Length: 254
Ligand code: NI
View 1: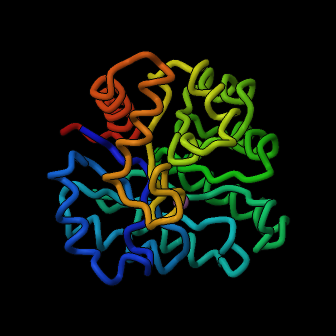
View 2: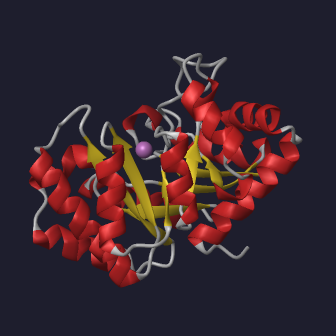
View 3: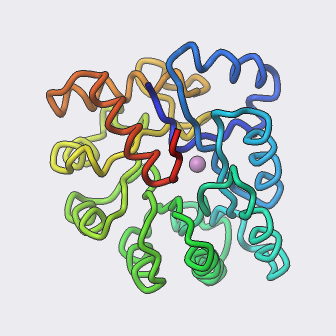
């Protein structure tokens, strides 16, 4: 039923009960998960999860928070890891000008390098963008990368249209259920469901009514419920269409 297009089950907040939790997800309707890497260590820990569980896939990539220490050797290592059959994307990569944990110059440099890698390997990208909407868009367009998802899309409806016109998907998660989600609601209203993926970003971004707790893929039902309400569709239709979208993007043919 559900395809969680963005999760972090290798995060330490799952250390206590990771196995038990993951093993309970399929009976709660979670059919597929893409676990997103965020630093060099998690490129390995994320891929290890994908090797352990059939229904989990992995990306490799380094989040803008952590690019300040990247080296060309790390890109080489990612290139090697990305040949694994359970690696379906490069990500999460992008720009974060809200936290600025890495200098902006480094963020731009390594974002471009990782886009190049995705293009070379013909893999879709998983994009993280915060307070850098236009620049993220411009750098992706300049790179020539033509497939990917803008994870936790928080841009305007106008920008959303520009992305989907070019074949990109928009990731929608728990923040759609928050009180201040007006902009995201507008995007979901206006963009055809064939361009939308659902995601948790767990352990983060837990949807209402569980906001503040640890998130997991079973809570996707609240995101699906909200999209169904906005679109005037059934929850099954939303789950099924977004699942097909994700399979298409990540080339999973099960
Ligand atoms: Ni994430």
